[in-house]
Length: 222
Image (cartoon, rainbow, N blue to C red):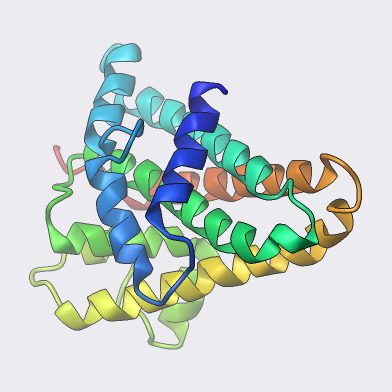
């Protein structure tokens, strides 16, 4: 088993056997602090920064590539089983991809100069997890007060927003995963096809979220 497979499958298995509302806060904490073979988001980001000679933008691109690969691995592994494995695979897939994506966005935030211990920044990370289209929709319906960047730099922290974002992100991630199951149901009848579909979907979704976070979370050190 390679390093990427070990990180993705170990993390998904440890964090939660089932998905519940509010679980995303625990996953976010683990992503920022590190779990098992997965180092803290800041440490991983700093390593990429060194690898790219101190160039923040190249380091961010490297993080996005790395985490897209990790998401693809966990998506492939958790979508290999047959119909009988779906009750376990769905929550494992949700937790696994959430961990990888939180780790990615937190790493980007760190490289851009944000304090990962700041609750406003953590809310901004969760908002990025929703993706650009969902954020725009929530803003339009006034279910989200402002963009991720504005949340991270807000003058004050709103504790009520913690619960709102946890609920919205959990709902969104479960909906995405359940939606993919409609596609992978057919794939499960064909060896490896379900894993390929799940893996490629998770990899692409992670690339999109990483790109959105990189665009949204502007440099703070200037």
